Image (cartoon, rainbow, N blue to C red; front, side, top):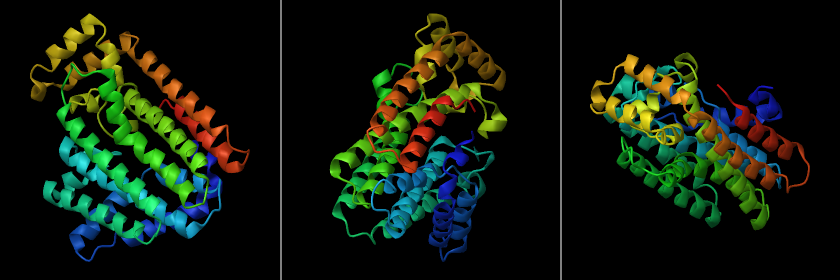
Length: 323
């Protein structure tokens, strides 16, 4: 089963969220409006709004409040993507030119800032202090994660703990916050809201690990960017950390990136093939599975509903994702 089929019953609500996203990013300045629209039209899985919707359906679902949270979180995610592409000097995202590529660094940075500002305007309509505290804390952590990612570029001596902390801030926290905010605005108990946060954290960790694996195992056509692009950008992900425990791969990796600006596609493809000969990919999948088992164990504590089953199905799908 394809992922969208698991949450097909959310189509109407997702369409409402999509229309709201388009309305909110319509800036007065034509360049900001055009750049923001380009980013939104590039697509995306809308994973965060989906988690907000499903968590909300476990409580007293109110579409207006849920929509506000879902739109806010998706806008924050979009803003981080624009900033990431500037930092990474990325020219493609999902197979399409990035805002940085089309408009340059300055416009891209201001576009990201504008989208973030619009997200804060949107969430300000909710009068729940707990919502604002959690969201503010999450944004702070995401920013710290971005700085840590920059500091760790081409650092081949970082630890597994460094990596896990980085992907927590890069991906897992925003998904965990999506689940918990959906719960908070739907009057779910604090205990259950915390459980949903934990579920989202575990799913987010697994999701990012799978993404990092696919960077080496999937095709450039599917990825929308060159295979091994994360490593080319200096991001040391879980498969590389595991692979480096093999002395021959460790030596080859360091030699390949001795002059990191001169790595050619042939060298990169050869390095990827050598990584695949180790057990790094299999070990990375096993760690992803550990997080998914925790996610499933946590969500199973909720009463049986369509929303709960969909949260189970999404976690299961993520664990089996191979493209």
